Image (cartoon, rainbow, N blue to C red; front, side, top):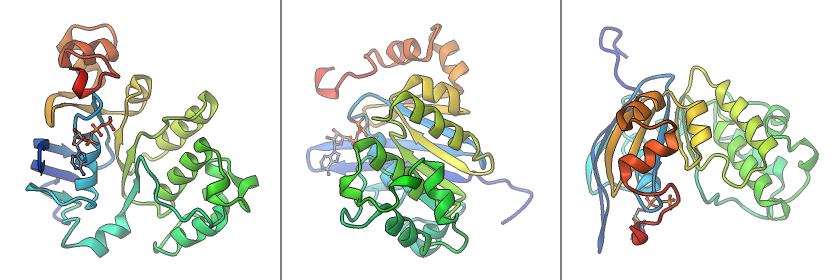
Length: 248
Ligand SMILES: Nc1ncnc2c1ncn2[C@@H]1O[C@H](COP(=O)(O)OP(=O)(O)OP(=O)(O)O)[C@@H](O)[C@H]1O
């Protein structure tokens, strides 16, 4: 690592993803600094998940490049796995394993993981340690997937729909956990404006696979001349927060 040229922790250049009948991501560039919490906002189908899946190395870009702390998520896969924690919208976990077994399994992937107890207590699943993943409620599954994303104390964390489906108390607890990640670089995909406003230093607003505005939540409100981030979203995209692309 050079000291004189601080590189972005996450450097995304001209990212494109084409499917057969659809360009889901159409030239997205993002430079996210170390320690930043960066929000990705956009309507349903805007290309947010596709973008973060490419950043995480789970989906191959049609064009463009991704570097995480200087590493390519495809060619440096093994190294990236050590520094990256990912919570995706759909958690693909073994349903027959208990919470403790899943936590222990994920701990084994990392050199310096959180303790099993800390990981479970962080998301208030200590009492559920013997419960199989399939027998958890939706919100409990979500909380476990957050713990698994953070278990390796990764330097970079990607969280897709962090608190969707969580009750207000659980949301606030999870926010507190994310706020405590001061050294880590976090990408947060969210539809929840209060969450973005509270947690994110900067935000990219994505529409039809492109970044249409970028800045702090305050900047976006100013750019749009809007009183709230939700109003800014509607004004800048011309759509409602929960609009679907097909409805536009
Ligand atoms: N495997 C795929 N094959 C074809 N099209 C896809 C595929 N995955 C996603 N898409 C399309 O790409 C577009 C972007 O999808 P993506 O899931 O990235 O959107 P999103 O912004 O995360 O939406 P949401 O807010 O609903 O989660 C959508 O039109 C979606 O239908």
